[in-house]
Length: 272
Image (cartoon, rainbow, N blue to C red):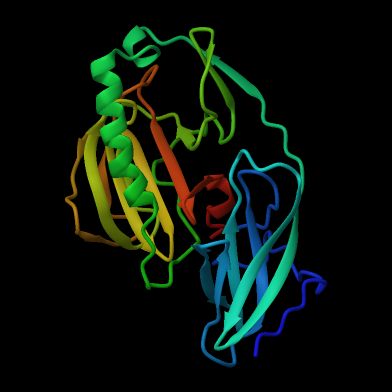
């Protein structure tokens, strides 16, 4: 028998500074909702947003579901399903407003702004590959406390509304670290290399699967030092910073994907 409680208030735990293993709770577009599912006295429940499975992790004796909110989500109400055996519980949640600033950039290679027909065909093929990587959902419980993968100042933040050579493009879906060519890029937590490749926009790229829909990506690399299927540990070198693909200069573009949704990587940075 299904227990349906659509009016049950959502118990959201604001965890900034109090738990190292969970991302910071930020119920806004591009953010992460951290949902307390109760004491971990039984097997882990599962959770879904529509048909999309959500990561469920254990921390401090409780189960928590993690929902990444797409950048184009409008403010309002969402609902997830929590499944415990044959029981289904509906959990409502509210999405607030966040306004991201605009960033204007000049790209010397005009092809990276206005791709040719041949380039567009390549981009479409590459998108199929990377979309499949982002949809991965393994059983392993991820460590959601991530280290910054390169040592350097943060430059372009997540969510910036980007304009290339005067033309509006998709928002910035990652976090840029301003470091020079050849600087090492390290795994922020344990995982498995899900994909490597040289992509039109992203340049030399590595994707790491950390489990349960938590995927990280490292773009514009000058060198890739890992291979598909390779397990990696926290701090292991993945490659080196570069300026391949669509880049105005050497830097690391670091992306964090949760439930097939790019989210703000700074929410996951460890506070060790």
